[in-house]
Length: 223
Image (tube, rainbow, N blue to C red; front, side):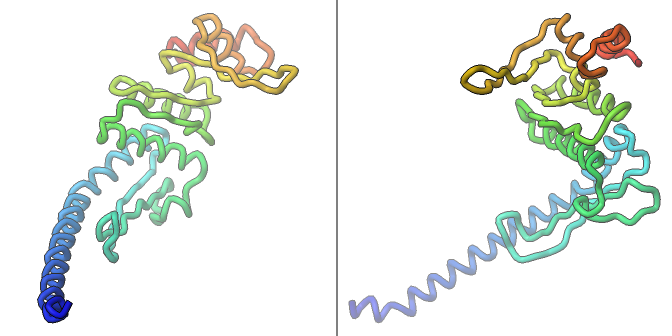
């Protein structure tokens, strides 16, 4: 015990040396991460702008901003995505400026980027098309179909423009029984798929026009 007490100064010195070495490694790794982020942030912003314009946001601008902070598990940087959909408007954080439809399109563009970079085997979109319709919905469907050439894409949607672009269509529905309500999922055949998309277009009443529109959507024709 006396020997250990006598060697306290040596132990403290060794620990201080270890702390200094680890701090140097931390700074080096954090700097390396900062350099990599700076190297791709303009590329990321450009990719997102191209995708957003394809989705009908002609005046969209995106910027990836970085500022320093104390060390954390994410490095030494605060990374913020700022955005505007309007011409000559100020770039602001997405949460404070984007509408529901704009956020949906931004999320799809970001997911496309992440899926491409991470080489994911499967990606799931759960009503990512909320707040969009018409031509924009069709463009979102085209973008998902493009992604599906490289990875598996599972999409939950209420929009016929999106549903029509899938290679396989599953219907999710609920059924009441004497004991409660059960949820079911069933793959649709070609005829059932036409009817389901027609229902999505026109509601509960099937019309000849809705059926023709559904067939046109499935054949990737304009309606």
